Image (cartoon, rainbow, N blue to C red; front, side, top):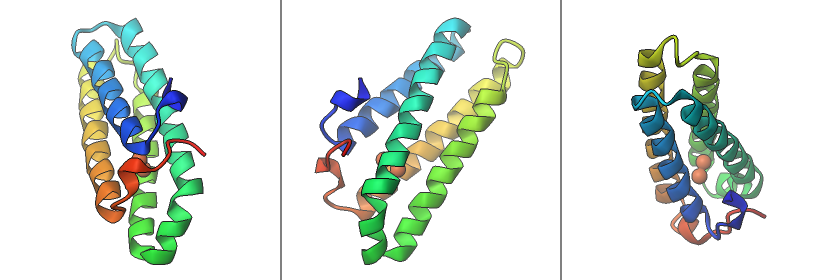
Length: 129
Ligand SMILES: [Fe+2]
Ligand SMILES: [Fe+2]
C-alpha cells in the first residue's frame, strides 16, 4: 500500500493515520486488530526511514550536517520506540502499551515536522526511489 503513494508527504500523512488506527484499536482493547495495525505501521515506518536515509539524507548532509545528524538520531529514537512497543504484551500491560504508543506518536510528529522544516521541497519528493 505504501509503495503506491506518490510523495513522502503523502507517506507521512498515511503513517500518522495508521499509527492512530493502531492506538485506537489499543484504546478499545481490540488486541488482534492492534497487533495487525502495529505490525503494518512498524514495517512501513522502517521502510520509510531506510528510504530517507538512502535517498535524502546524503544530500541534506552536504547542505546542513547538523540537520542530517538530528534527523538520523530521531530515526534511531523511532526505531528504539518500535522495539519497546514490540516487547510489550499489550493484553498483560495495556497501560504501558498506550503510553508507549503516545510516546511514539509524539516522536513521530516532531520528526515529520523537522523533516519539512529542514527541506522545503520535502513534501513533493518521491516516496520511494
Ligand atoms: Fe524521517
Ligand atoms: Fe519522513
